[in-house]
Length: 156
Image (cartoon, rainbow, N blue to C red; front, side, top):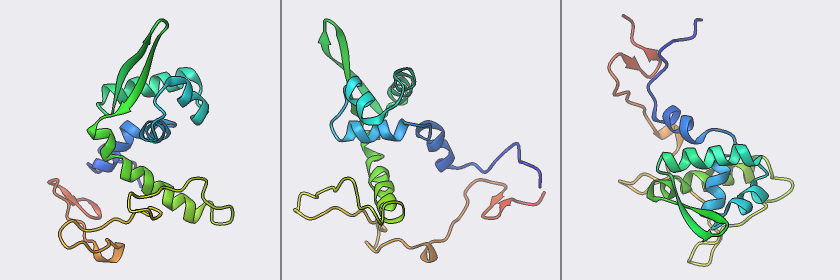
């Protein structure tokens, strides 16, 4: 089967083009945890400084992070999530939960999130309309891009 020059139009692909680069989601994790200074990010992520600087610039340019000076001499900045960045936070915690369950089942979770109610936070995707947990077998895709079906491009 030939590779399509025009792959399926998809918001997942568009989002991954922005935050799917190595270290980008880890930058967002650290900034959401309150570790927004460059040296903190280098230490906690382990990314090379030049690559980290590139990721930060891209996330700021995309409106996912803001950059604010915290020192003038020497000039240093800290990064904080924008509203758009905070909207990605549930994705981070869902990825964390998946990793805890499927990759660290034997060794245990390296970090627990506590909800303000005092209990451990475990993310669950729910339907906004009815409040029920969203399960694969209960979801139906309806492509809205002309010429596309769930199976791929419509026959010409």
